[in-house]
Image 1 (cartoon, rainbow, N blue to C red):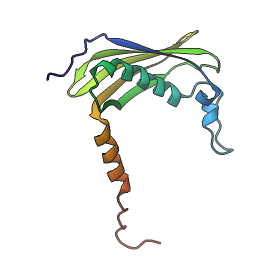
Image 2 (tube, helix red, strand yellow):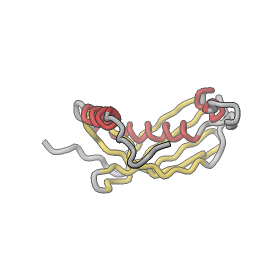
Image 3 (spheres, helix red, strand yellow):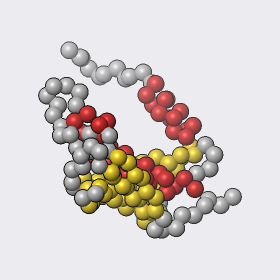
Length: 147
C-alpha cells in the first residue's frame, strides 16, 4: 500500500489562551531564576509542534506518531497571560524523509514568533522501546582515575 501524500500548503491551526503555567515566570525552579510573566518560548515552541503535528494526522497509520526532529525558531514579541495565541503550521514539502513546515504564532497584537520545523513519522512502540534501551543501559565506567 502506497503512503498517503500531503499537498504543499496544507495547514493546521492551534488556538490557546495563555495560562499561568504557560508563562516564563512559571519555569523558575530556584530563587536566582528570574523570568518575566509572559508566554515562555518553550511553550510557544510546543504550540508550534502541536500545530505541525496536526497537519500530519491524516497520514498516520495505526501505531504511528509524528515527532519533531528540527526547529529553527524566533520568538519576537511578548504575550501576557489571558491573551489568545493562534499558531499556524503550513506544510512546505519533503526534505528526504522529513516533513518540513513553516510555522507562525500570533496574538491580538500581531506576530509573536516564526519557525522552520521538521517532523518525522515513526512507530510509537519502536520509539519508546529505543528510548528505554538507550536510557536503561548501565553507565560506562570512566577511563583513568576519578577523584
